[in-house]
Length: 222
Image (cartoon, rainbow, N blue to C red; front, top):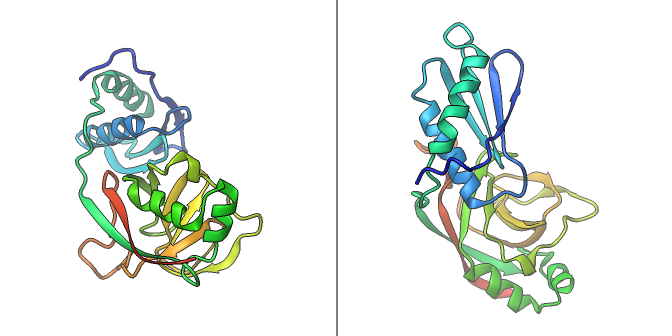
């Protein structure tokens, strides 16, 4: 439903052909849904070329020859109060995970930080439902909301030079999966056999914004 009282995003120019629409922290599912709704509507506006959704923000790339920045800002301000933060329309996806051991070398550290046993960390991590807020950092890397707050764990003080592809990790209050070998500082608790990014596929990324994700414990080595 329309909510005229909802806080307007802050608008910042990014050069001459991009506009950043930014909401204040914290990130919430409702905020992300409004961002997605704004993006869907903005794609219908003449001159808007591309969308880049982020955590609590949306960047609109536009053609200044078709629409100037002030006119685009006015469209955003007028559209925002009427945007609906309705139910997520994404897909439901289950991701099998081998937790602990060589696949999840930081599971014990997460357990110590949270005061839970490794098996309890796995149980709570795999029982939650997550929502993909946006893709970033690496192709196919999904930043997900929904991590149980008791599992929140700070990133490693020294990032790894090479995190194995398909590693499942916890970084602060979020969980995510590294689609490719990459440096990274998230706490690695498991690994999935599923490919997160295939540039040759019709849909290169396994996950998309709005998808609902459940992790399934295929095995636990703690």
